Image (cartoon, rainbow, N blue to C red; front, side):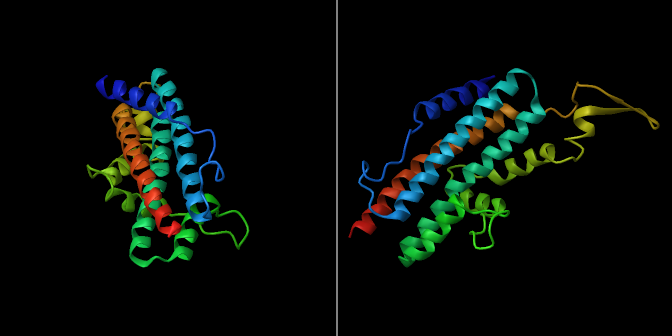
Length: 214
C-alpha cells in the first residue's frame, strides 16, 4: 500500500509538470540538437504519465499482468533519458555535434519499419544499461528482467497467471493468479527513476546549450 501511495504521488507531480510545447523561439533555443533533445525529454514525460495512468487503473481493477506489461514499457521509455544522458556525457569529451545529433535522431525518428535511410532505433537493453549509471540506486535491469518474465509467455505470464495442475493430466484455468507480480513496487521504481532522470537531463541539456552558445 505504501508503494502504491508513493507511486500515485509521483504520478501526480509528473502530470502537473506536463509541458504543452517545446517552442524554440519562445525558449530562446537556436540549435536544432538542443531543440530535439528537449523534444525527446518532453515526449518521454507525456508517454510515462499516460502509461502510468493506465497502470494505476489496471491495479485498481486487479489486472496485474496487463499492468506489468505497461510498467515494462515505462522502463523502456525511462531508458531513453539515460541514452541521451550517455550521449551528452560523450559529447562533453569529444564536442562532436554531428554524433550527438545522430544519437538524438535515433530517439525522435528511429524506426525499424520505416525507410531504409531512417536512423536505427535505440536498442532498449543498451539504453537500460546506460541508464543504470545515472540512477542513485542500481537494479533497473534486474527490475526489467523480472517484469519481462510476465510480459513474455513464460511460466509467470502463462501457467503462473492462468493455469494450475490439479494432477498430471489435468490443468484448470482461472483468474486467480499464482504468480502475482509486485506491480506497485515496480511502478514506484519506474516513476521515481524517471523523475530523477528527467530533472538530471534538464540540467544536462542546459549545460549543452551553453556550449553551443559559445
